[in-house]
Image (cartoon, rainbow over all chains, first blue to last red; front, top):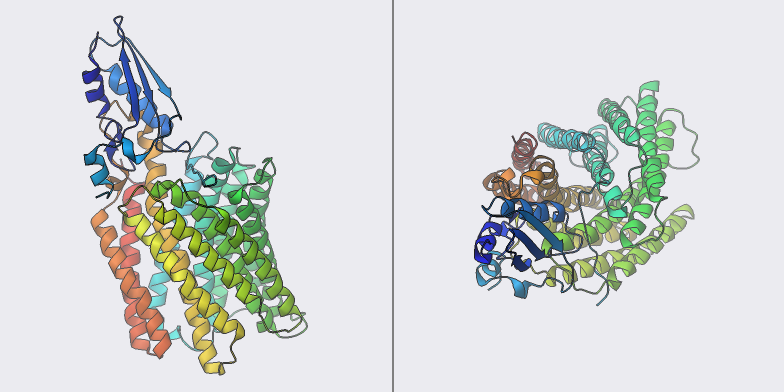
Length: 100
Length: 423
């Protein structure tokens, strides 16, 4: 079974190309579940429902986690509830976007 | 709070990128040529507006640069916004070449003031066919949509105005060689320009802003009634101005258009105030500048419409108005949106399926931000310098301004080249 920390580390390599920030620090990853059989379930969102990058980013998350040894199958669930808010960002990410 | 104006740029509904790319490249080359020609002939940017070089500059700027880039952007965005496919990719593909041919012909004939022969008529006719093809293509794409939202309302209004402006333009072109319009040609030329600026361009600027600005600033929570109010006021004002124009009445309805444009500015302030992305990148700084020039152009426009200034002073303000609208409002917004949209489209086609598998560039890595910033500062000196030069009637200041603008246009061209040739 792959540790959830390792999965989050892999997801940190997936960047929003417009904002230049990774999806974990942006707070887009809501939940990560790793099963004994190597299956991984990721629940994530986008900054907006009309985000033009949602297909690339969710596919990118799947590809990044697939590369981890021991991972068999990755299922990315895109959810819009609860909606993303800037409160979900880490302090570092907030600073990058100009928040004091 | 009401529903925000959400956005998107590329989906399975997008037309082939090669088509849109050609519009963007052709318009960027035209923009550099325009700036170069203005530099070489800056002494003609003065006095009465109905003179060969100025008419050539005006048509290259509004057709070859602004309208061409808007045509490309609409060909990309309208199917995406409406979640339907473009009516005809072939019309979009051939329309560009017809438009280029027509606009080159119009500009060339104005430059030489060879407006009486069949050459000008053929050029105007070719450009007209291209514009009508575009209007039909977008119109029939819109026909597939069931409900009208703020974006589609602006697009419908914009292409309607474009069709009317082009028709008036064609009739004026015919009238130059074979006079048939009763009354003063210049009277109708003013109507042609006013409908182009207040109708076609303002509807596009407003509609595009409601779609793209919230997306790029991450602004989702704001009131939307000022946007709709602006739409109503600008269109009511245009109708009023046309009626007043035809009956030779004072153009008091220009005040209604102005009220609408100020309401638009208020909507923009609400969107920007509610943004989650506090830091402004290069593209957004250009857009904000454009929004700053809109109230300025509005005030000058109302002054021209209602004042009884002496002819010399009036001519000066007509030039300032035209220049401010084309370079302050339209060009700044177009450049800002190109710095956002073009890198995204190229990125989407080259790298979207590589995310997570290998390192892919960020959008801001697709061009030189440093050169973009230098361009930003230069154009911010060049455009106000030309406006100041026109205001005080000093040709040297106008010439210096156009020189700075030309350098800025080269930097912009280089940056776009970097994006399009990215490996």
